[in-house]
Image 1 (cartoon, rainbow, N blue to C red):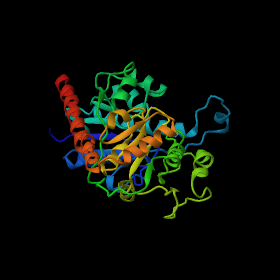
Image 2 (cartoon, rainbow, N blue to C red; image 1 turned 90 degrees about the horizontal axis):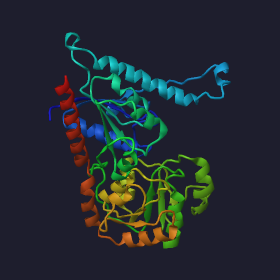
Image 3 (cartoon, rainbow, N blue to C red; image 1 turned 45 degrees about the horizontal axis):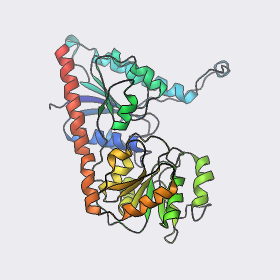
Length: 375
């Protein structure tokens, strides 16, 4: 396809920079990098602090402090919500102007807008743009996004990151499924080892304490890796299960350790050096990028059978467990650890970055072609 000028809108919550706060940020960085490698012109709008290597334009999430009178309103939204709202509103108004510059005033700035954020305004205001707007649905339906979809018009197309997510959205909108992908060069095959690994944000919906409970049942040492997203949860349910609840327990002889928030290369080495990667979602996981990252390194996966994980794992790449059941997960961990690592790596090919971006390019071409045909 011909090179396109694409505006990519990222989340304003966390910067697109390593170590990534989560799968959404890693996905955005990989998508932008690969699209540029293929010759597309990409302008990324992202949270303050995003990596200079990505050349991101900072979303103007300016601090907002309401007046004492406004704060007295019991129905007033949080000030962080207001700051985000105004940042996206400013961006969408700017895109509205840029998309409506006609032939007499020069060319449009972009051929297409790809909304990769979790905010409602890029969808709600998409009808104001004279270019296609592609939105990736990274979450199950939530009220703000549902209400925004009701305002979408013919220039909008929607992508779900899994069949499970598409099914959740089907009562609201039909979405094409494009599975997330990882760059195999950034997740090389590892040697494996005696330890299990759990990676992700340490928050209740990811339930890392369940991985620790299962590892103890399985008699298997385990490393936790990732940012602490909910300190109260970690203090109450995670640290008591570590070898040293008062510290991070990073010593080589510790069975149950927290290694902190690692950069991508160190994380890839840690995951590739594990015998099994463990996923313990307490909600319907929309995709589970950490599962594909592990598979790419040759490390098999043991996971609760929730959300998209049954789509990702096969008998040659991992084992599924009964949700919220540490005993079932312990069995899955032992079984998965015995899988052939070469077969696991081969199973990751379906979730590679090239396959994902190929699918996005096909949808971009359809959307742009349709708009140009209408024009």
